[in-house]
Image 1 (tube, rainbow, N blue to C red):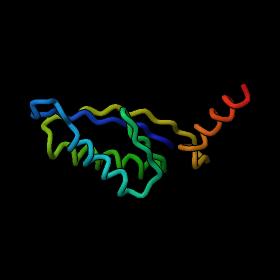
Image 2: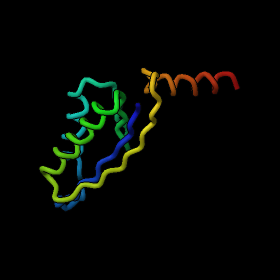
Image 3: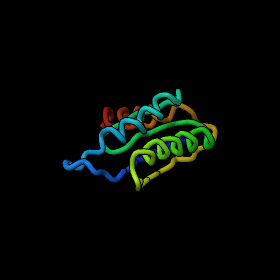
Image 4: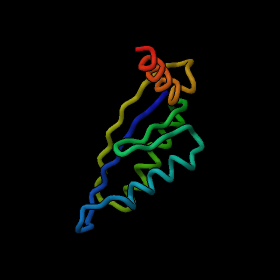
Length: 100
């Protein structure tokens, strides 16, 4: 499965910055060893249901340690029997664009 998730901690920083809290969550994902990528809006992670959800929970927990409130947006692509889709899905689109 692939999960795209975004965490929104509350911030007491006058600028509204949540960089440090989000960095802590991304650190959890990177240390998980699962295939992942982070962009400006989401972090995508690929693996089996239990391992991916455990990483998401750990990321929420680390942010919650620094923030009294955490919002979580999560989208999942559940497709048993398929691995490597984090990159394969993008490659299929790139191929389609090259054929057009």
